[in-house]
Image (cartoon, rainbow, N blue to C red; front, side):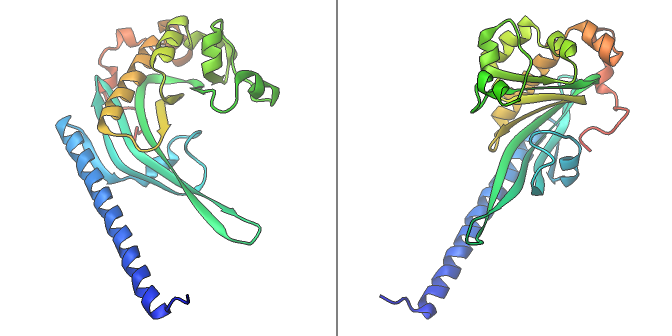
Length: 247
């Protein structure tokens, strides 16, 4: 049966408008949720802040296009400055017939400011590659005494000695118990992320995890690599940073 364009076009328009309106309502509800969440904790809420997309490197940043940073909350968390937001970017593929497909990748990101700048270190789940397979393909990561930890996580560090100094047995216990997100030390930022949209409960849980990670870093690491001693500077995190954080 042939479809009459005079009938189909209005239907397509109505469906398109309906989808747009449903998405609009969902986004509005999410903005209101995070604005209320921020107000409840005395934090700042911003609808969008695209400049944050270029502040950090590595996963999930600096890839794809149409990078968006929305529903941004920022403020003090247990004496440390933090920022959390919805992040997304797009990638594109073209099939053999020239048809272009666009995929939107979404993440929930939380960042905690550190007492000082440390070398790069990243901890992520092994994912689709097991440790042996990843190493065979050249994706080498640091190895630790705990085989359970080695099977569950991949650790990358600029300096192997530094990586082992940060990821102590107590740190491994913490991550095995609740290492639900990937995280990275990048300068004076501790960046955590996971795929998909986060909710306020997850933001609080992930900020708590990042704080626990930070507290597990041994004092000598702060002293030797960052030139600070957090134990002797209990108010340091409440002071304005020397370089903009989350700005």
